[in-house]
Image: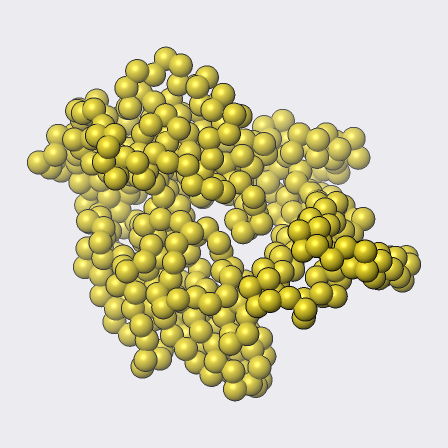
Length: 483
């Protein structure tokens, strides 16, 4: 079958390029093949013409081909593997009709690639994260989400202190030390070729993150972005050696101070709609912040009784937290429009629901923006994204809709602490999404939206996540208070 497929592909490509010389036509034809799941045909079409293109067009098609590889890495599970995971981890064998039902309802995510049905790499555990009826088929608790243990927040909330800003309270500060390692796979880059990396580093322009100090780097020569760009990084280079991994390390210290805004106390003034801040942070920003008819309809419905900016935030936040459960996510670079994806698939990880919150609030004329980095809670160190919302007269307040999902917490705002608050276990790296790097990154990013794991490229092309590994070790300098 593979030989026949390859022969048909080559005949198709030869005929196509003999009859269609328009660049627009062949771009559309390649896109059509991708939409149909014919990845091999699309790759062969690209390979047959790539050397005849200009440098810009060549880079464009190289990224298209690279994107297909990214999708293939995300969708690599077979039906047998999905069933085996459920049998092993949930204790029952799903019927074909049940699998089909999950597929139709978007609970079980898959793609048809080269004629084969291939499932998302974490599709099986996601079933039991997002579908309550599926969880009822097993007495085993749902797979883990991204929410840390609540006891840390309870203790901190009970020690909060008031500030000069009405309704704003500070939580106890936590100081941390980080050792970050990025290792490029052995022979992923040719011997003698330069490997370039951007490692995540804490921002200094955020009040909630004081005391930032870079203490060591594996390379004596490095460049610190110093918050010149939306993504804060330490840049280093190293020459690859045959038979050895290429290792980069940094160490730094920082403090994190959580805060909470009591929404019943703050006074929201009318927005200055002529200000640059208002215009920037209430605007659409394609591809991920778009006021589609679908999104507008949903947002208008859930905010129909909201009269103030605070009431709009409450309505949108509560709707997202209640209706879109956390699930392991596709790589963002493979998703065309993230908020629409969340709505369609009825699920979303932290960054996906953060973008949905931002888009809905902006549509309602409430300034909102992206913020991200890591959650650095003891025993729960991981990538994490959240949002900031602007209220005139108060300023920017943090809002983490992903942590808003879950059971009640025995504090005054309960779980809705995260509607207008953030804890003291955060590493702030990004002040926006899809920004620029310092120094300039020549080739396409592995993560086109966020920046938390790092970015790597050689002299010839970007190195995707399957070519390197990363590790963060966090030490709590005031560790006794965290026990």
